[in-house]
Image 1 (cartoon, one colour):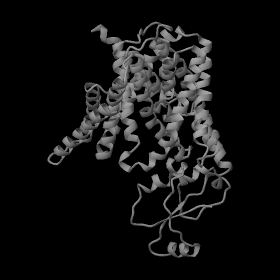
Image 2 (cartoon, rainbow, N blue to C red):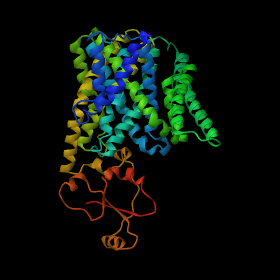
Image 3 (tube, rainbow, N blue to C red):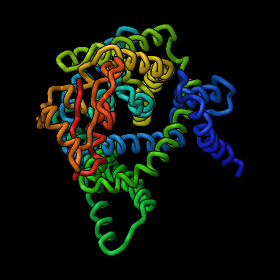
Image 4 (cartoon, rainbow, N blue to C red):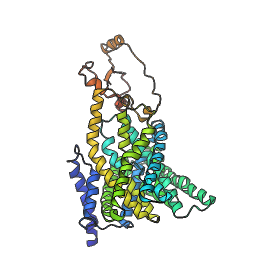
Length: 484
């Protein structure tokens, strides 16, 4: 019985602290992941020595697998594949090369600073090119940031892992000597990019088919549909691993199928699953913090700090700056996207996958990754609120091009649908009729800041939020939007 006290205490700490901490850090230069990672560092061997976690600890592995599975499933759900590929295709095609370029820059820095082999350097590059939706949450949920920029970061976070994970799995196979000849290459690639995802897609399809068959005859409450969604995630992971593929890619594929076939099930899952995922991820931060406190000193500190500087301040900003050159974004937006590509829980989870697969020297790679993650969580957590506020002030001084785009696809040149126009006289006549239209003020933030009043009776909706606003409106009344 006493063996259960420590894990029970950890879960209790996560549940209670998350509620207490969130009340104090909403507008503070600190983030929830920063608090929990710091707590793990304090409790670990390098701190108070209360929590002793090894790189091969089964509890850490279970929490890590659950966390990464939830993250990948939520990535698929949040991309809303059921709405078509237009919203995410252009950002993915543009930002995908940015991920590969970031990987290359980080790998070069790792080789120069740590004298790592080509495979180990590329592993570090891929691991640290992962974009963490957990650390990004405070940025993409802040409505002061234009919706197109928030959607672009969300799309990148959702698709980035699917670019990075196959690279990591292939590099692991190379490191373990499993890619000897052409036959081995074909076999491994088929297992990673085809068999595993197909197994996950099959689980997603069957889970929807079974739920639909039941719901044709019996009512299933939202709570149990949410639990059903969690079960589908675990089943997809098992199926992917059982066929010799990647359980994580299988989970993402299942999420794509479920989202496309029945978003209602995903909607039910989001109510319960996101809370469960949050608990698992915060617990993972504590465990990783305890692990990092014990292994952080296995690599020289000065090269690690220089490496963190390159990863956070040079690699991604340079790569994203090149990718976004031809987009309709301001300098502010490019700097904002380039900086907020935090390496957090996802990077640690991928590094642990490398350790669990038995790659030689993987603990050293995990230690280096840990130092970068600690720097990222601290720096990105401290700068989120000030930089968002500065960005918002810049938009009050002049209208930025990203404010005129409602979706990330618009930033990359997707042509918007042409809206019909009416004259001022026609608008006046309609407003004086018995059935006036809904009048919407979509002027930019800078125009609003000049103090010029809008048309009486109009509703204020920022232009970049107009599509999201329109989704909840009745189709019976016409809408007239005006700007400067």
